[in-house]
Each structure stands twice: as C-alpha cells, then as structure tokens.
Image 1 (tube, rainbow, N blue to C red):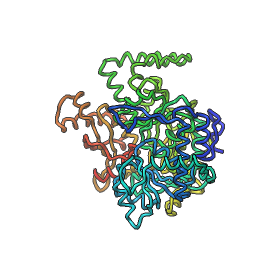
Image 2 (cartoon, rainbow, N blue to C red):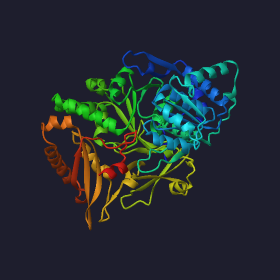
Image 3 (tube, rainbow, N blue to C red):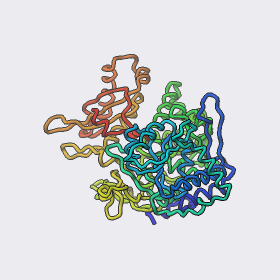
Image 4 (spheres, rainbow, N blue to C red):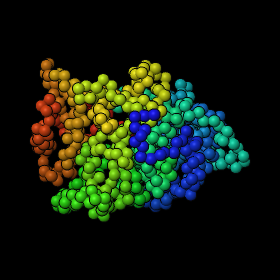
Length: 575
C-alpha cells in the first residue's frame, strides 16, 4: 500500500496480466472501434479503416497462435516501426502469448539498431519496410541471434515473412481448433517487456519490465484519471516509448477508447479535428508550441484585452459552478479540433503559464511524471487534485520519498512499489547503483510538500555546480528564456570564465519568421543584440549567481530524443 491509497478518485479495475486486460476489453467493448487510421497511410485518397475490439481480439489470438507454432514461446521479439495497427497487434500478441516484446525506437540510426538487436538477443524482428536492409544484414551476422524476419508491409522478398500472411495462417489454425494460445500460461512476475532507455547521455540500458509492473501502473493510473469508452485518443508520440505505450495504447485499450493514428507532427491540428479527438497525450514542447500559436493569433487580431476580460468572467462563473468556457472560447477550441476535454502530458516539466492558459480555455491539463524504469508513471495530478507546476501525487500503490533532503527539503526522488522494474538486463553494476535498500533512485531532484504534491526541480546529472558551491537547475532558467515569443528552445550551460570562476551561458534557438515579424528584417548580430537585451531583463529577476553572462543564437534545433527531450550531453559537446 502506498502513501496515497486513501486519495483514490475512482475504484479501478485490477488486472493481473495483459491476457486478462485483452479479454475484458474484447468482451465488454466488442462492437466499439478500437483503432482508426487511413488505409495505407494515403493522405490524398483518404479511406478510413476501423478495427473493432472484437476484431482486434481475433487478430491478437491468430497472430500469437502462429508465432507460438513457430516455437517462439518465451523468446524475445523485436518490434520497430511507425505507430500503426500491426505494431499494436504485435505487442499484444507477443506479450499475451508468453513471449517477450522488445520495442525499439524507430528513429535510431542503423548502427544503433544493430547494437540493440545484438544486445537484446532477440530471435525475431517485426518491422516496417524501411528496416528491411538493416534487418537482412543483421540476420546474416553470426554474432546476432536473429532467425526470422517479419515485415508489417506486404513487400516482395522471399527472405522475409509477411505479417498479413502469418495472420491468415494463424486464423486458419484457430478455425481448425488450435488452442495453443489458450493453454499458454502467463507468469506476471517474469520479464515480458524489454525496453532500452533513450540514452540522452550514455549507452542505453535494457530495462526489464513484467506484466505485473505495467498492469499495476494501469490500475494505479485508472484510480487517478478516468478515460471513457466514448473517448478518442490521438497516438502521435513514438509508441515504443513507455509514456505513449502505457498511457495512450495500453490505458486506452484498458478503458475501451478509440485510438487514432496521427499522420505526422505537422498534421496534429488537422488530425485532432478529423478524428474528433477528446484526449490528447503530449509532451510539453508540443503544447507550448500550440499555446504560443494561440497567443500569437490573439495578439495579431488585437484581442488580448478582450480575451483577458473573458477569462476573468469565465473564472468568476466557475466559482459559482457555472462552466461556460467551451462556449466563450469556442473559436480558440475549434482550432484544436473542438472536442478536446483532457490533455495528459509528461516526460519533461512545463511552463506554469501554459498550463494555466489551457485551463482558462476549458481544457484540463494533467501532468504525469515517471521513467521507463517505473512502467512509467510515478506521480500524476488527478481528476480531483491538481496543482500547476507540480507533477502531482504519488500513485496509490507507490511510496515516494526524498533522499538526504537539504535545508529546503530538496534531494533525490526515490520510489518503491509494484510498478518499479525488475532491474537492468545483464547489468549488475547499474543495478547496484539504481537501488538503495529496495528504493529505486530516479536520478531526479525535487521536494514533496506537506500535503503530498511532488515538485521536480531538475535531473541530478544536469545540475550545474558553480565554483561558489551554489547549485543551478538549468531548466529553471530555460523556462524563462523560452517564454520569449520568438524563442523556440534554449540550453543553459556553464563555461570556465577564468581559473577561479565559471559563468552561465545560453544557446538560444529562435524562429526567424517570428523575430522578423516583431523586429523587422535585420542581421543576425542585430537579432542577437535584441535578444541580449531581453536576457538582461530576465537576469534582473534572478539572483546574481544565476545570471546569464553570454549567449549564442541559432535557428538550428537542438539535438533531441524521439520524445523531444534535449540530448544535453550531445549539445554540450557542440557548444
């Protein structure tokens, strides 16, 4: 039992393993659409495909049956590709068929794919046609375990099995009475999922997760935030990533929702409208970009005073339990598809102003916090308890504490509970570092208020320790810089000033069109001078030891992971 067992908002359905979750949803939401997407990803001649829960259940069973008949029980199976129906069926068929799924990042370069496939010891790879050549090369490598290649697309290649053909063979087997899948026993506490950390600083570690880990996290999250069978979610974050995988894909399936697949980052706004998306799972960078666009449109139309007045009226009515925000701000909400009721976000902290801004327009934002190693959610705001700027409350079955708090109560966040990983695969050295007396070290610094709200102040490894012993969390200053309307992102770092001192510097990425619109067409030096004046204003609001002393500006985006986290280590090598 965790710290917040008595704060549950809902009594969740407890599931012990994926098989149980699948069977419940297939039976109770049989005729409901589970997945909706465009046939062959064709954006010109649009034809929608809809898969009901009943159909998904049949496909999972058929595909798992065929894989099991190929002798793959307990074997590791790679899946890599875009967010798509075949990816979802693969993941659920493998895990509910007592095989081990190894989802890989679709954005990895070939050399990293080769490295992770080798390290995983997987015998099968299931992939998009984009990966045909790298997988064929790997299968020939005597140091690699790969024995079978399966493509999710219908390509002509005799060395590669086709997903659609294996699905048909599995259907035939099931129709002829093959009950291998039914007889397979699931062991919820054994490794079922192997996930590689995104490796923003060093070699990715292989995280071992069990079905018990993730199912505990699903039930926990379900007691904080409710999704309904009437909800439609847009899947656009990389599905291999544990946040998208657990919250959109698995929690969506658990709740009987419809998941629509996004056509790509630049189509988000269009997809929100065409699929009537009601729940949006995102990362702060996407939401902050959206909010800046909304603010720019309001400014360009000269409606700032009007909107601010309307916000005051709407918030005043809210105190009287009258919510007219959806009516008052209809035009703004229609730009986001018109149906969004809830935004779930995580993976990085977000500017408080953006959170309050969306809430003012009638969109509820709920922040979650976690890591791959914790399946992933450790804490989240709930439908009942929210606090902008905080990452919420520890989930009901988890215990969270601060290790060696300083005078402000800040220290490393430690967590213990059923959704914490089994450990790192073949990596005893890292396992020793990751745990202390059964508590998992998150590597994040933060503090917990008396009423249980958790605040994350920064990554332990990102903290800048100045020569005078003062600690600086770079994200705190980056937030302030990123608020400038023409700044898209920034990186704060330290540089040696002389032999006795260090100074804080900032690399600032600006939007050329927006800065040109605000300041007119000028040279880069003139833009830099203008930005420097703004930085001096920011410095005035900060203690002297946090002052930025030097800036560089660029239009080139910072290097990021696929979940839009800045690879600080890579960037620091460049600066």
